[in-house]
Length: 256
Image (tube, rainbow, N blue to C red):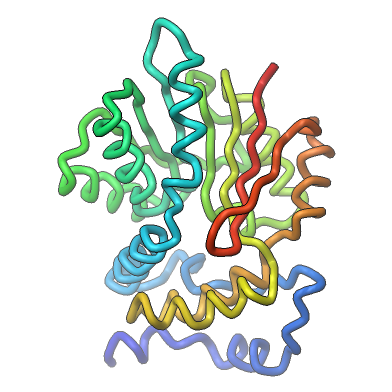
């Protein structure tokens, strides 16, 4: 059986996707292939490589970098410690570490993920890129509190995977753990965003996992109003919401 055959969505998922009218007025969370703990390792790694390419094109690191630069100057007398929650393959940590080195800023970047496979992959990827000082560990950011020795706690492209209750738990844990600020980078549920996902995922990667999961992720994404409501409900009422290309948002909250 070739990789494309192994990666095909289940008949039930195909039926659900095809039969459901694409109505982006409301969130629609359907099972994603990357969330399957039994997903073939080769397919999982190929999907991580595909997502890395998409993140580079969409300039995910640029969206949070300006905030990290400012935060590093506001944290006086010590290095800025940053935790990327649900870090996946570690590509964002690597890109930010490269930016910090070019800017000669003292920033230490770590990552955590619920998937041991993702953490192992992130370790290998940072070694391949000769990134020193980064550390990755397994953690369930929904069930368990996060370590409290980080200045900035961020997550990228993770919030849309969660239902409302878990999204609130995640934001609460991030706010409680950070010493300086919380950053949330994620998809916007818009018609243009959905079109970008369908077309872009097929142009930028051959991974059938990404081809399937990309559009599903946009359908599961939060609207601006929904994100603001989530933040307010967990006490982050002064959070700032900005937009960046391609159809993504950045939620920024500073601890007083």
